[in-house]
Image (tube, helix red, strand yellow):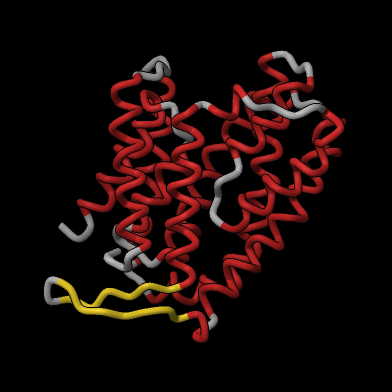
Length: 259
């Protein structure tokens, strides 16, 4: 059961992207955080996100707009290093311990790392649920700023899609070019953050149960890969509300130290 449950949760989290309107990373990070330390959950999410986007890149990469990649993607890639480094610092700094208490016979720990991710999960879940990225957009003059913001949060927690959309929607790109450009930028950010993550978290990853981790990554990838090709993506508002509530609930549990 210690293997089956995390893998099953990963599979359903990936499939939910088809009906909830939430991005893969937004759903997978809280799902993985239920079973693994936050920093490992971020790394696992990054691996799945990267693998999924690499396949999309093979299909659509030729439609990417190079000018936008230079203006937005390069700053995002550089900022992802900074965001990833902040995550490494938060996870390794013992001085950032905040509070510890007993509840239901267990020890709950509240740390700066958990509080940070709790806040990010809640905020970005609310942003995606409100569809704010399609209603609040920026002119092309702010592409560099957008790249820095998207890349930083992409490196820190993997939450990059919402901000990227807010800054790219006014670039006048056709649908294929918009999707392809976003995919290229996402891959660049994923590569950037994984380079930092592997230095900090690879030892911990090797010490964990590799079978559990491998099956979680595989299940999540298969859910996104197979589901996207068998089922038409349709956002169902009812499902979206339920998922948003669950994400916020997990964020609160993480913030109070129960996860």
